[in-house]
Image (cartoon, rainbow, N blue to C red; front, side, top):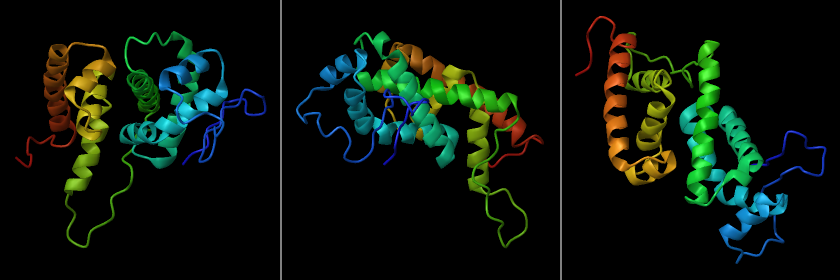
Length: 210
């Protein structure tokens, strides 16, 4: 689906993963073996991990960024960061969990940078309707997604993973490395804070659709 290159693609350390890549890696090679080889600097092994997880990493990135090009950039950045820090993966959780955590961190860092530069915009632009101007459900949904970026990193992450990526409480708790009980508390507080932000940003006059 994608071609992933390290920032210095002219060097022999470039990481590439696209259909047909890493054909030398046996299909029977376990994920643990691929991770262990990657920790020793084996780019071919890591390319196989990229091939395995590139779609879901892109999907998570897109849920955060709401733009295909930005999502591709964030997915690539996530894999590069994962390769750079893979020696720090201790195996106390699934590799996929660790990778999702890296992806969430990369996306939220970029969103925070853009928010500070006032570059977070609604994507894509809503088509103009043929009836009198009216905020559509689509526009409201996009504005709510924008409001999510105003939350703290942990609250924005849990809401995005649960509502936009459909990940279960148990999986999110593992990704965030917290007890499920703590996650439920975060979700409650995140929803409460988001509601206040939405009411202020979308319905400043106190009117809403409920």
